[in-house]
Image 1 (cartoon, rainbow, N blue to C red):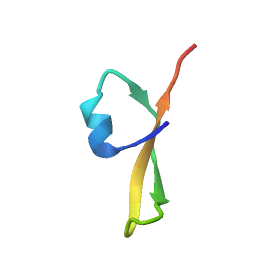
Image 2 (cartoon, one colour):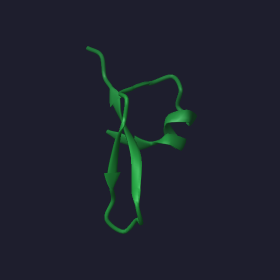
Image 3 (cartoon, rainbow, N blue to C red):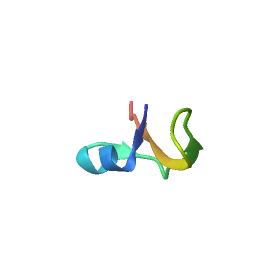
Image 4 (spheres, rainbow, N blue to C red):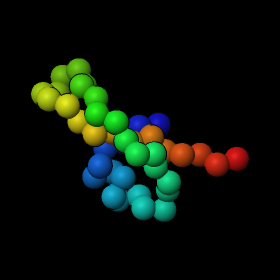
Length: 40
């Protein structure tokens, strides 16, 4: 699951990767997205 920086800040209890820049259809410019790290 990928989340934006504001969502990442709101759910600090979860671990995220270092993020990546992505262009999203329907949104101007690039946006930083972070993947949730799931430990098993």
